[in-house]
Image (cartoon, rainbow, N blue to C red; front, side):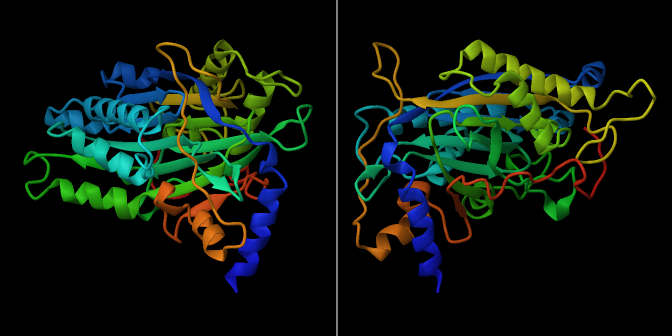
Length: 373
């Protein structure tokens, strides 16, 4: 019964991917500690990553500083190792099969952080040029999220003169829906939990993470943010900010300085949600009026054509995987993200047709918990 639906999905892809070419990210980031948290002497534990093949946001749990642990160290180290592994597995000339998907990549990155202590949420996006369908290249963005950082993909669905429209967005992972209990990657000692061992976090990565494989097209815009972004801004507000900067008809590739400006505009809009309006009312936000006082970090990236690399620089490339045109197994494997994404049938693949856009509009709030930063 499911094969008919899969075959229809395959047809949608076939109409678009014929012009695809190798792609990579061009991105910039901005982050800012909320002024209220500066007054409390809380360290900004947000960390961002923006390379040609890997984007990431890790939001360290600042409360862990109460136990004498540097809240920024684990997120810094895990993204550092994600960058190194992406370089090794997706660089030109990397051994075929070196990249096995986002779950093995994050697991190895976490294992390499030992014995570093801390706790962090994470969203990571990997641009994978290794997939081919019916012999034609089909670049994919493999997304893995653990906790309440989020990723949003926008696309000009009706040509370069149209607005950028949200086509895919991850969901926050919060235990019982409570704002203060996101799923986390952690390593702690006896000061916090005498029974902790790394196997607990590895199980979170392998069984608790959300993995999605999303079709990537030139000109796509990827917005990644800590919970300070998506707890304060509705999806359509983010889209409005993006379109105000990257107007219809904007030529791509976009200048990196413009992406950096957009990232800053998004962060500033988040912080503005915690300030009363001239009438004294608090601005509306997904978690309620007044939003959330929080450190805020944002990565803005454009999906651009992979160009020939020069000495000292590179962009992702790998040996393509092939699927047989007449094989049902081939397309079923693709729609489960195959070995590349290491996904299961509980994970998603999105072709980016706009069917999931518009979630969390201004009349749709998140529930549960309080709004403490």
